[in-house]
Every structure is written in C-alpha cells, then in structure tokens.
Length: 460
Image (cartoon, rainbow, N blue to C red; front, top):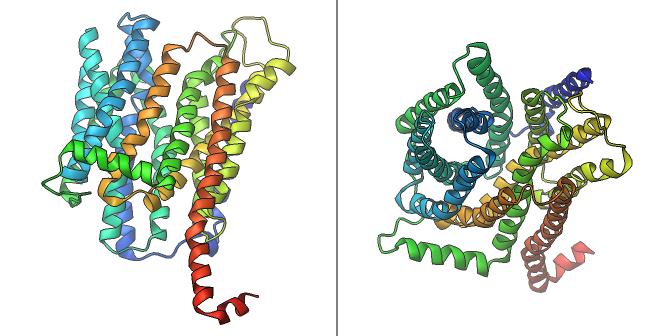
C-alpha cells in the first residue's frame, strides 16, 4: 500500500504540471508591467505570511503533548484560539478599516511573532496567551491582506479582471507550494537536524519578520472609512446593516461559513478516518498530497476566472456538490467495505478510497479560495470590507468550537454526514446568489427595451 501514496502524489503532480504548461491564450490574462510588479510584490509577502502560518500547523499539538498536556487541556488551548478569533476578529477588522490595512498587516506579523515566542514556555497560562494572540493574528491574516490588496488594486486603476489572477496565484503559491515546502522544511528542522518541536515556530517568526520588512518598505497605506466621527460600535452597526440589507452579502457570508466550517472539521477528522485501527500512515506525506490537490484546484480556478463564461457564481454550485459527495465516502465505505480488525497495519482498502475522495475535496478547496475572494471583491463594500469579512468568521468560529468540544461525542460518519449536508446547503445558497446577481442585468435590459423598441426587435 505504500506505493499507493507515491502513485497518488505523482499523478496529482503530473496533472498540475500539465495544466500549468498547457495554458493557452484563452487561459491567460494580458496585463501591464506595472501590474505584474505590484502582483509579484504581493505574492512574495503573502507567501512569506503563509509560510509563517504553515510551519506552525503540524507541530502545535505535538509541542503541547511534549510539554506533558493531555488531550483535554490541548483541546482547551485550541478552543481558546478559535474563540479569540471570534471575539476579537470583528474588532481588529474594524480597526483595519479605520486605522489602515497596511498597519493591520504589520500588526499581524507582530502578533504572530509574539505567539511563536510563547511556544518556548511550558507554562499553560503563557501558552494560552499565545493561542489568544494566534487567534487574533488569524483574523488579520484572512481579512487585512485581502482588503489591502483589493483597495490598492482599485486605487492604482488596474482592470478588475486582473484581480482574479492575483487571487488564484496567491492560493496556488501560498496555500499550495508554500505549504508543501513548509512541511518539508519543518520536518528537516525537527527530525533531520533534531532541533526540537519549537524550531518550526522560530523559523516561522523569521519568515514573518522578513515579510513585515517588505511591507514597511514597499506598501502604501489604504483605508476603508477613515471618518473620525465613526467609533467601533458605529462601524459594527454599519457592517451589520450592510449584511442585513443586501441579500447578496448575507448569502456570501453564509456560503463562506458553511464551506469553511466543513473544511476545518475535515482537518480534525481526516487522520482518524484514514487510520481507525491505528494504521501506520505517513501524515506529512499525506498533508503534502492534499496541498498538491489544492494546487490543482487553484490552477483550474485560474483558467475558469480568465474566461467570461462560466461565471464564478455558476461553477461554484458544481464545486460545492462535488465537495459534498467527496465527504460521503467515509460513510459509504463504512457500509460497503468490511472494516479491518487488525491494529497497526498499513492503510486499508477503504482508507485508500477515502484518500482519493479527500484529495477531491482538497481540489475543491483550491477552487473555493480564489473564487470566494473574487465574489467578496464584487459584493462587499470597500468602506467596511475587513469588518464584514470578520463578521463572516463569527458563525464559523462558533461552529468549530462546538465541533472541537464534542469531537468524541458523535461517530465520525455522523460528522462527515453533517459536513456533506452543509456543503449541499452551500450549493443551494450559491444558486440563489447567482439568481439575484442576474436580476439587475435583466432589469437593465427590460428598461432598455422599453426606451428603444428596436432593441427588442433586434433581440427577437
């Protein structure tokens, strides 16, 4: 079965390479040299930020366990991270809109570096402070950088379509290639060089510091609504009113929460799903395989968004249905494939089928990120972009905290079934979003026909 891992990884790598090398003029967007310079600067910074994040991920649980903490205490630390992101996310998002997105990006670097430093202490209270700082940093990572990019892109007068190119490249590099390299680099630091489980956190702090230096030296400041007479409560109220009064924004928030909630639940479930009887599986290699599948998805997304048809609102319906089907495989194999009762063997046949399904889900994740970024750039108002984006993360963080707290209370098949249902609901909401986004176009066409009868005749 060990050969199976290499076959899947090699096949995905070949498909990604073929997709990137076979792009035609229809799949590419012609841009200016000024935009390319701007895009490459952002991609370097974003890749460094994601390297700082990815280096930590595989070793957080392991580090806590080496300090002697049990599963319950470690679970509380993880809940503290998501909880702080929920509680403080909207505050830091509003501050980013009011005080400046560049300043918020620098704050992300400083906050995450401080979080990395706390990992040197085995004291539970200090580690808890580190988790709170990490939760705040996560809120900034997934709102401030995107908000700065969209505002700066528009301020410089670049074409709107070019924004999708930056989004897809950022996910291809930051959430794909960088994740794989970070995993391999972390493995070298911990296992090959025997520097201990805290070494990846020190390396992450270095990458974050380099990225912060580039931000300070080359980025200009931009704001959402810098009005002096608006306090945080007023900004919160404005963001809430924007979500409540615009169905498109509300639908987008619900879609994002449903998909990301399923995605983060999958992060906790894939290991026990592939090794229900303590089968020996190469966690690092499987993680790299998932990231390669995500790169495949982002490569497909760049092709789709480079064309006028199909629209993002259209193809994302299919993506959500496919992702829903892929997470039903653990349920299907549980009923159709006899489970192995031998402990500690290599991955089972059912595990192999599930791994293929999980790779399909990760490919959908790769399509989702640049696509949701493009829709957010279209529908979320600029003056409260960071605030609204962090509002979207409130239900997500509540959901993840509930899952973490009750992860042992339900069978794993029930958890996957719940995620599958959420993704189907996301597909239905996406269909609704496409329908109402088409309404203004139909109304404009109707108005034009009323003003000009010849237009109606031409249409006939």
